[in-house]
Image (cartoon, rainbow, N blue to C red; front, side):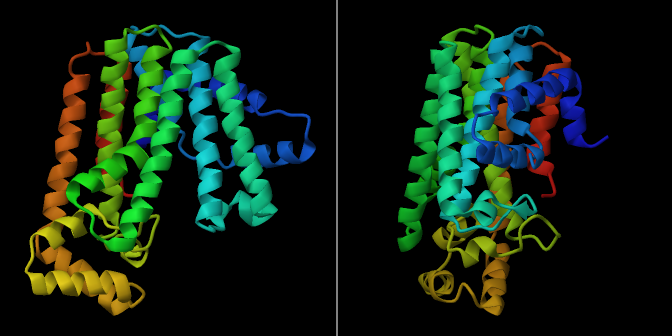
Length: 325
């Protein structure tokens, strides 16, 4: 059985019901919008985020569950989908999960409006049901995701990123949404503020480990979802590169920065950069950091009694850093 199927097992029925509720939530009076949202739903990914909401909710409440949990998962999925649609416009990307993106099929103006629709739909879902605690958690995540993206753009221009800034960028860009999933899961079943915060931290730790793993893919030869060296081509400062820049001679540092700034489209030069990072301990250091975050996440889980939901979350934490794409 694949890890994702294993993770889903204890909440399989809830996920099935969630999908039908989510489809219903998308229906509008605008035929064009219905065609586009139908297209989006049919091309859904692994749906890891709703899984986090359900598994955390069940783990902290000994299997209890109510409508608020479904709404929490729907809000996350609506907001997450909105950010993906907008990202594809910003990145001028024609593909999403192997299919044409919304902006490729319907052009940018419509894609931006669809993203706005999904965002407002998510916010209204919580307001209409007075889920203000859930609304606050998701609103914080949206603000931080925007800040993280802008911070990364600002730093990419200068390539002067420190490790502390790198962690702040990935905490905001990637980890904050997974943190919101776990916080919302706990909040949806009436957990205390302390427990919601603990689950939010758990999600943040996993999110950071997830992004570090993504950065490592740039340095592997294996066939994965993205071509090797793409972060270098896009002048993205990832942890293996940051560590190497901070731990090499001035001469090598100049060569590395020059390579990333001015020769990032040169395949031979990109390969040389990758080889240099590998030879100078960038990969080992990054793997060790990723495992640090994994260990902290597992320590939080271990405070809870054994249950199928905890078991699934354990598999999830390990899957995040062992996945092949």
